[in-house]
Image (cartoon, rainbow, N blue to C red; front, side, top):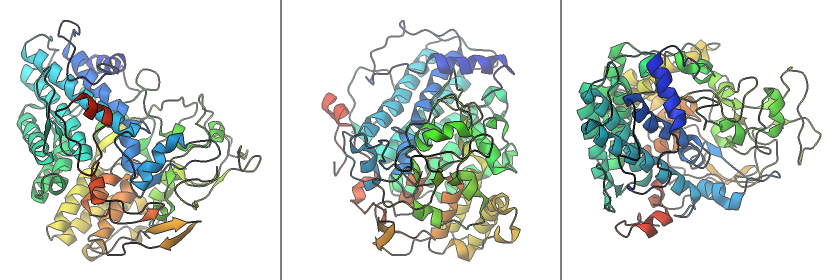
Length: 535
């Protein structure tokens, strides 16, 4: 995010993001009194909450877990390291437990957002935070309630039954059911929406306006059957229709523009998590996916870690149409060159001194060679990039709205209408082959193209569960569009295959794996909590 000086309030907001990112690092339900933390304006107070979101994008946190627990990404060990006590391996194999550090990272980040939101709501209600120009008490509290609902959505999606805390309290909470969390999230967002701004401008970039809140609510409704046992397809459609009817967002004509360094002006982004390489860091996908030799590819100021690790599951790549533009726009493949485009980059471990050529095939999900596996290419790594990227993360975007609506229409029996929306999104990916852009309703009902099965020594040796996936082609469309964006685990669970299919070194390991365990240290410190079933 680079346009920091266009609007003074937004500039202040971004600076507050950097200044307050570590607020309440220790997850106690509260031990901070109002007189210990004071705020001079509303933007400073809400900035803390948005800053908390930046923690989610570490490879140990939400973003890494959503992708590497799925059939899309894997983080194998290699000659440069990356075993780290097996923490990534267990995510791929679905053998994680309550002591995996990813569980604590997610839990602490989610509840840090919740606890900060509770405290800031109480301060606004007590008139202890001055309101900035153009803000009302009602509108700013509504915005914070949606932020809190956002964090509770992540709690609900990842942990299921969990504490529901809405006030500043010293009481140790007990779990409530996942369905209760779902109902709270829905009611909070619906109650807040009327007071939210409809503006889409620099002041509301990276903040929840009405349309970002409706995008969040649509995502919650999309997974309602998983969370509560009752589907809410029509409710999701209504929220999507409201965003579409607003006329404030549209598909970008260029797919890569959405993920570029200067992506804050994309017409497609509805809600972004803003990053800045110096004052708002935390976005570093390139550091854990790229090989160190790729430093010269972008004349980087930082060196990626070892030979990198996060890479595509080859079976996921095999599901693409070879002429789908999103394949090359998402994945780094083939020979790698320095910034001059001519000087071949070289390996440093098992391929030492040899040209670095990223190949699709990997032997399994546990250990690979340094040049095996397609790497991250979705988010632009600018020339001179640092340890942290300057790109903003598009958490909700217009393609998401169109494809959520399409999926709900498909499930409600309107397959042809769904296909029109899917085709609309596909058009830019098949610009050079427009005849392939359109899909039909009957195609969306077909089985997935993904070649599932357990892999050893580069080959599928056990297909495992071969039952067709209902609406499998729709699941494929979501995978091709949203790789690297944190969707895949959630989508696989909704389509019923997260705990039933085999891929790479993963075999099904229990239906209870659709949620994660509450961190053991949290269970130990709070006797009122009950561990999730199976853990």
